[in-house]
Image (tube, rainbow, N blue to C red; front, side, top):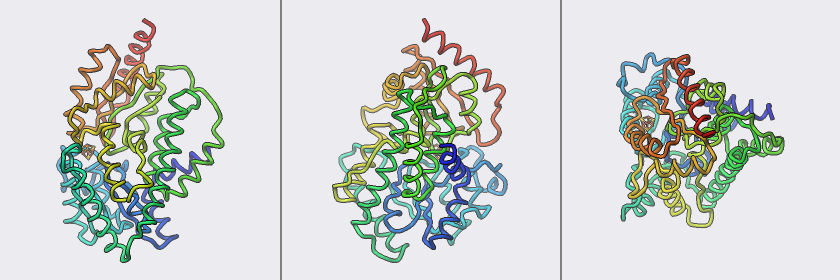
Length: 381
Ligand code: SF4
């Protein structure tokens, strides 16, 4: 089991190195995707390797002059990587609108790396609008066509169905891990779970499924050590720093569930394998936020805090830790409502604002220890 996890950890730590290796071995195209809503299935069906572009740990250097300081760490890191030449392995970047900062990032890359095609497909943000289905189907049809032009050959509908099936299989394997962890039957740390999901965002899906199947076969029923059961929420496009996840556990927490993008948010929804692919992709996109709300999308009568209250209760968590990437506007707009809802119900919660640069770990440790103590006492009361 340790070996499988270490392979996944290595890919998660060095996603572009994996992509370079894959390209060398296959001679096929690597397609970068911006988070959080663009399906990789079409790029996979076109014969490419879709990889979700990741923040790296390098300090922002040459990218600094091209980006506002008040952009989130994800955007600043992506711009920096592009200007450092790290994206040379990519044959294109695909993205759909999900936040204003990301649109700016795409423009900086366009201006500085003009040879790298950036395909922009507008995804509607009002998911329950009367025109949303029609528009979304149109978006995926256009993307299908643009990918055919990029790859230089038609994309067969049967291949798209196969890709959908494979991606569903991958998501379902990861969901099984979530179910087992939520039920307290296996012990996977926040760090390990992130490696599982983040590597899935990067690796060839068939290879990833094979590794997950090995992992499932090797997993032994091992309940986690006693501690405060916590739910992690937020941290949208970029993966929370591993040091922060480790600290939660060092301070006495056990992560039982999450709605992180590098977590449950990435794998909770499957695409219909029987419907015509464009319709299935559109339905997947439009219904995702109804199950795990996204602060960059709008659905009438749907609030993140209502979902969170239910999810925290269902997971048996004793407290909520909100990880908020500094300057992430969509998340910041929602946080006050989350705070108010959890305070009203007396459920312990803690907000940790994270930065791309060094985090003040000692100060954070004190806050986390206090939070765990409060959660422990409330649970005992
Ligand atoms: S983390 Fe927030 S601000 Fe940054 S790209 Fe994602 S949604 Fe936009």
